[in-house]
Image (tube, rainbow, N blue to C red):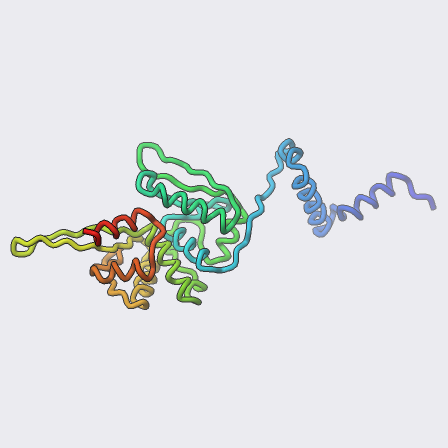
Length: 257
């Protein structure tokens, strides 16, 4: 029995791309299409076919733990394909550069900066579905952090170095150092305070727990965790440190004076 050329062509198509009437066939055909467009970006653009950006997938490390802290502090996953990290465009210029290089080193991704109107706020924005999926697998949660009452992922507690790095990321973004001044019997006193503010009660308790684990004399008041003593602040910068030049300058200025 002779098979027509049309029939032969159909069989060859099924062999290459799978049977379009089955799940396996559709999957095979989809993979072939993606491969075709990846090898021909111009064709993908003309066809309006969106290809997911490939990223580097880092192992769990001190660097990844610090980024988790940054995202829990002033970052977020507002949807399925975007990571944002907020900062002050006037006081955090150097920290912006640090974070941008940090993201490139960890994930090999590009980012852009969105400057908000009529204020000093700005955001680092990375658009990548693969990146968001990866971060969700690390224990982060998408959506409103206050409503979801986010917390530090459990794997951070596996190593002391991870806990310190995550704490550094949290306080570099959502923490502040400021001078408290007061008078007693006509004598002026000044001391530096550390304050971490957040509206997730669970996260506040976790930060307090880690600080006390490392023998910091820390206190929880409302939506804030404090370290009051000069010795405590000095110990923090010695043992935890900071990558935010704004915080480092305040610390240096206070202790130099």
